[in-house]
Length: 461
Image 1 (cartoon, one colour):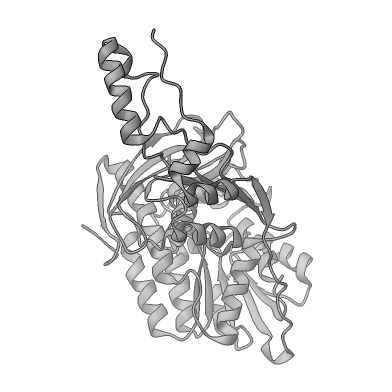
Image 2 (spheres, helix red, strand yellow; image 1 turned 30 degrees about the vertical axis):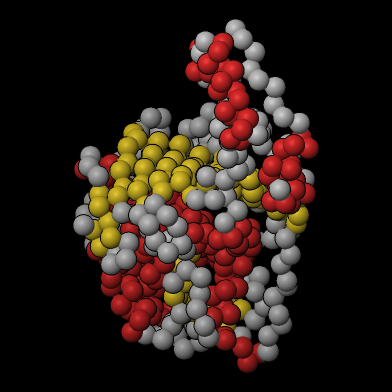
């Protein structure tokens, strides 16, 4: 096979590309930086916030630990339907902690300023509305609602009552996400065309097979209160402690994990959400009585919005990932990528050269010799050579500092809004715009059809 033409030398390339290429060459040296995060300011005793937690399960205990990292917050009361968790709450936080199986008792207390709602998905909306109506500030775990139809009611309550509503997808408060957002809006990856994101797991607990205490019974669990408006079924401790596996009480992997992925991408892009959602998947391994898939994939179409051009997004959750699991979000642009992976993100730039090149896997090699010479002369005159891209890695990596917690940062943002006014990073509308496409993905999967969504009006179309 005839040889491809010899590319021009580096000096000729830089002369052709000019100052922009030189600047890129300097920028391109690989660097890793650790981001700064200031300590929370001290607060006076008069600014102490009385906090309660409704739902003392896994998320409730973890939310509390994160919330109490902010100075001036005092944990005063806990509610849970299982008495064992109330006993544990007192073991951890002291015997003077007020505990109850009825969350409404907490809402009637004057010493409670704010509540965390970390209950089953199917009770989020009602408890949040009740708490706002009682004059409390509310941190509602994601997804904000279990059903799309519930979103308007929560947002209306948020607007009607004075309490600050924060939705709990803590990743949107991350300093890492804010740094990625800065580079994205600066145009460093060019035009966004695709987002790829996943959250995979490889463990029984990761697949929601949580431990069930031996004393679980109708005497220790308020089963009717747990069911609420869900279909009436006989007492079942598996349904109580592993409720995420059941559509009656949870929202599957979409509401539990897709919602985090949507939240992060929407914050980074200033996006209000997709226009079309389609999902597929299946129950591939964890055949334990659950009625939701353990492998779930969704594709979304995003139309043009002020923060971005039209692009596509692919989401995945796999609860039996033999590779070990992990999570990642990758934004692919025409001139680079933003890659978020754990406590770091990497920005890579790779602008396509103006000249297309020739030779290699190319029709040029099929031309007669005279035509090849003619083409090479034309190409040299037009482009000055083949012009490979600038050599060297074009990447920047940012890490969060040791001990940093976006979870604690999210709570700090909520408490700051209570004390000083202003807005939170994830209010009801933002939270619903992440929950709704997640719930639409569930509808798409179970109904086997594409779901249309109006991200501005926040309604199905």
